[in-house]
Length: 130
Figure 1 (tube, rainbow, N blue to C red):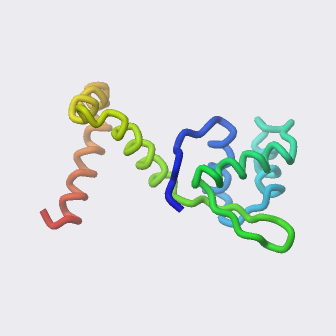
Figure 2: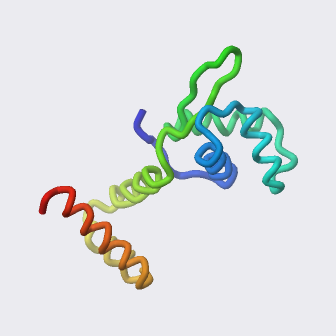
């Protein structure tokens, strides 16, 4: 299923962090237990986590499979793929002048970020045989 939305709230990001680090194939209870162990989400209800996981599935960010009576949730994409989708989505909103948008972004980039970009472009060129 393609990612339909990459805009995630704080709790959605925390849930995805758990699925990426502890998954795949976690139940609502598993996710809740991991959130509680991370200390900053002690007061969450089971139904809240269930709703967040359902919303993430509807967004296409997670996938779920039935294991007995419980759903098992897994990331639909890696962190990197999700970030790439967010970048692509942002660029799609400025189709009139994508170059200008990229230049504004790059003007604020650190030297390290520019080095990362150069390395990524070199890798893409290598893969495409250019």
